[in-house]
Image (spheres, rainbow, N blue to C red):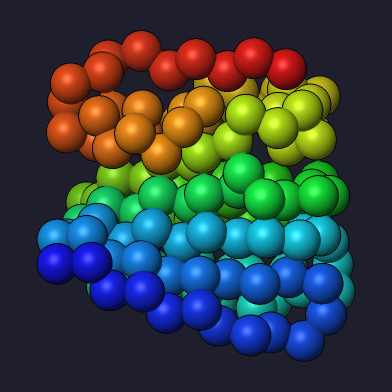
Length: 132
């Protein structure tokens, strides 16, 4: 069953939450900086708590700060601690450049499409491709 819930947030970020089975997909759009960090962290951690797998779709992100990357690392760690899986989706150079510039490409499971992330979560796709 697919559920869709768009959450209007103040500032320059929008979050849309989709649920497919026991996987939560949180699509984030806009600028991810210090102004939206607390809201982003809260929603992503809620996604970890409510499912066995979390996908963070960053394809509509127009700015990604280093602080945002720290949040993504923390959420990935929280998912692992909870026995859940966590994957990111982006093929946008803004996000990929930030990840590689910080050296986090080996610590975040980043996939070019939502389909690739879903395949990885199901065990069908063992490799992760990150191109900056």
